[in-house]
Amino acid sequence: MLEKLPFYGQVLVFAGAALGIVIAAYALWPNLGDKRAEITELEKVYTDRQAEIRKGQAAEQRLPELEREIAAKKQELTDLEQILPNDRETGDLLRYVKNLGDRSNLDLKSFSPGGLRPAEFYQEFPIEMQVVGRYHDLGIFLDRVSKYSRIINVDNLRISTAKKQRGRTIEASLTATTFVFTEATP
Image (cartoon, rainbow, N blue to C red; front, side, top):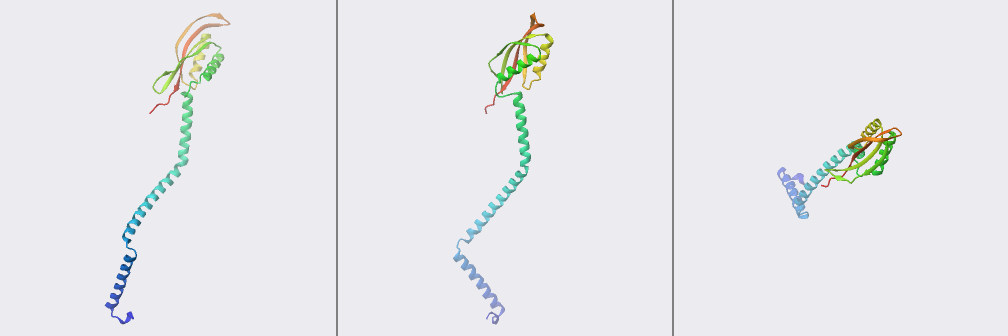
């Protein structure tokens, strides 16, 4: 039946049908414009999420490197805690000094830990000691103390003559100061 109409008639029929479809669509779906805005917003959210996924994938690829870095930092912290521990460890220090004295042929006469003295991010832990032995043995003892994994400062070293007993010629009193880390408060 459309074939019998002239060309402009066919165009008018198709244009009218298209207009009818558009009017029917707006009648059936009156908020079609709102749906377009909603679709645009959802496309933006989708694009943002895709970007986040790419960032996550990049971070996942760096994960082994970051884990190695964390392990290295933990090891470094462990090493630093040996040098500057969080507590006094008086017993361990006494055993170490006693062992050093014995290995250096010195007799440890006294070992008197003092109180903690606060400083910036650490506390000083002074220990008064008296040893009896020979001069060279004292030098060996001080050298070994300097090689301990913790920081130990020796000061107030006073050397005097000792009563000769079994080759012991000097008596020395000194202050060995070690340090304890204190967590900085923000």
